[in-house]
Image 1 (cartoon, one colour):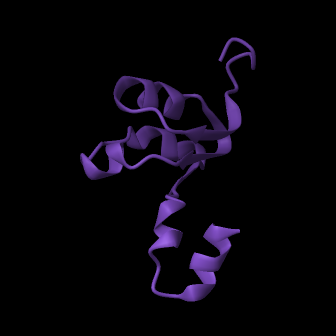
Image 2 (image 1 turned 90 degrees about the horizontal axis):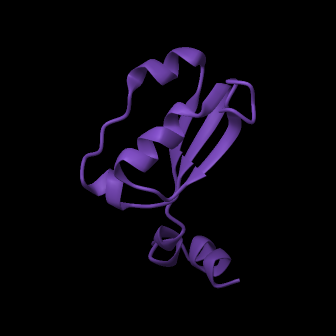
Length: 81
């Protein structure tokens, strides 16, 4: 936040959990994106501070290993490449 004069960053690609994940979430700038690439926080029913969404931010979870096990060969072939 210091490096951006308090504005935050446009994109966070996160694999941290717990307090570190929440600290990263608070660093998302207005209209920014938070991309969760880990599973632990999702599986453990982690909770986000909903106030961050009032700044028109987005949260997305993406687990690339899901492509490996997808029923559609198209996604499995992308993963193998």
